[in-house]
Length: 257
Image (cartoon, rainbow, N blue to C red; front, side, top):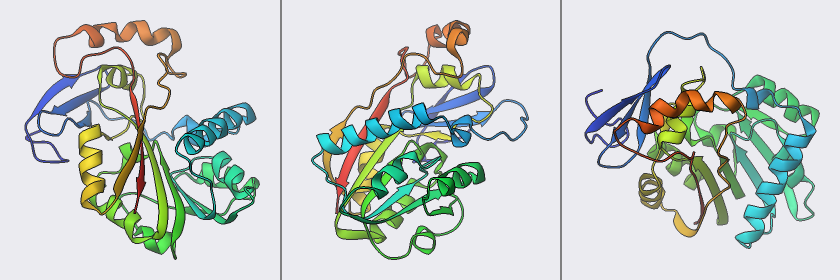
C-alpha cells in the first residue's frame, strides 16, 4: 500500500496471520488488506437473535444516551443497527414518533422486521443515505459500523444533510490498535478500516457537526469469537511496530448540528 486511503499519509505495515494492516503516521487510521482469498461470510452479530445479547445492547445504548442527557424523541435513525434490538427499544419510547433501521445484512433486517422495526437495505459504498432515509431525523445512531465505511467524509456529510435542526448524533467505533489487529487474524469478516479519534473528530467537524461529548464505551479484553485463542495472538501483540497495546480500544462521540 503506497499511502493511507483515508488521508494519503505514509503508512507502516503490521501483518497478522489472515490480514495485513497498514497504519498511517499522519491520521492514525488503519486499513486492511487480506493476505489470502477468503470466502464471503456474514458477521455473526448480524445474525444474532439471542434475547440476552439484545438486553445487554439496549442497556448499553440507554446508558450512553442518559449520560449525554439525550431523551429520545421525534424520528430516530439507526444506521448499521444490526438485528434491531436497539431500534425496537427506541420505538417504544413515549416521545419517539418513528424509527428506521438501515442495515446491509438481510438476516439482520429480517430479524428486525420480526421485532416490528422498519428496516431498509443500506450499503456504505452504494446508495445515498437520503434516498434510504428520506426526511430529517432527530436522533441518529451509528454504532460500530464506521469500519465498513470507506469514504467517511461523504458519509458524515450525508448524515448532516438528513439531520433535523435539533439533531443529536451518537457514534461508537473500534480504534486501530494491536488488540483489534490480533483479533482480526481469526476473522474472515474483519473490517476494512479502523479510524483514529483525531480523524473522526476532524472529518465530522468538516461536515458541519459540532462535538458535544466524548465517551469511552466498555472495551472487552476478550473477543467472544476468539476466547482462548487470544493466546495465539501474543506474537502479534509483542511484535515491534506501530499501535502498541493489548486491549481492543473503543471510542464514542456525541455530535450536534
